[in-house]
Image (cartoon, rainbow, N blue to C red):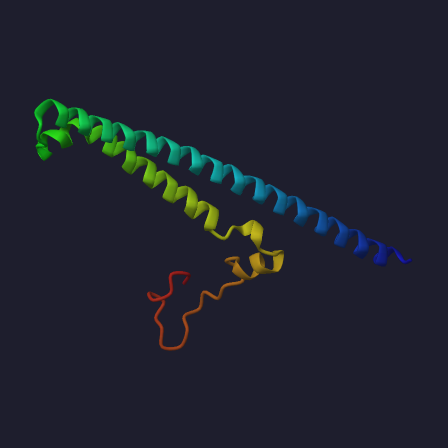
Length: 132
């Protein structure tokens, strides 16, 4: 086996090993994000339970529900639910976002600034092209 053949084989094995490690790391990261989402959903459920309990206690005390007063009593819980929903959306977007790790070196090279043409296309001014 020639030296260049051995180097080529070694580079292929090295690349496959790196790809497997990247996939494992990506899967572990996604699992961690999903666990965080589950934890946030449990926290959100606790806030809903507090809202329900506060609503019932308010009703039991007044025998009616005044929306303005009730909203004042549960406003903080509602803010927390909104905060949790926003964080869950961010985490889900991170899970679903294509990462550079999912791409081959050829894909990354084709997206590099050096690979993109900065010259305006015909009929396009330099002001239409953000890379010009």
